[in-house]
View 1 (cartoon, rainbow, N blue to C red):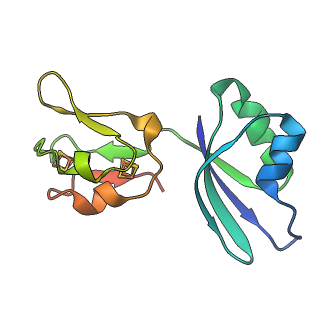
View 2 (cartoon, protein in one colour; view 1 turned 120 degrees about the vertical axis):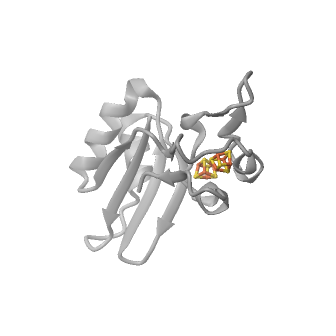
Length: 128
Ligand code: SF4
Ligand code: SF4
């Protein structure tokens, strides 16, 4: 399961991810991170079975934790199955199915936004 975790660093520099890994024993995959002097935002992936434990632990530490359900969204009325997004995506999220229609592997998306910029029909958006 993917979570977007937002946290403040005003209270100190306790490393949230490292502390959560130690406290829960769950290995956390950090897929994207933006850390600034006073705040941070990370996209993490954790095993479904451990999702509640990890999210509760982070919330208790003061972080805001949001579940990412559909990372990238395709507007089927706009998509023309041109395939431009297939080559641009670094995570191989997009592929053609047996009918040469665009299909998605949502769980591989890291919300980088490259596909949104590359789609000639404005058919893609990402969950912020
Ligand atoms: S780039 Fe846009 S129009 Fe082309 S296949 Fe991808 S989503 Fe569809
Ligand atoms: S946001 Fe990035 S990782 Fe996700 S589908 Fe688009 S290009 Fe791929």
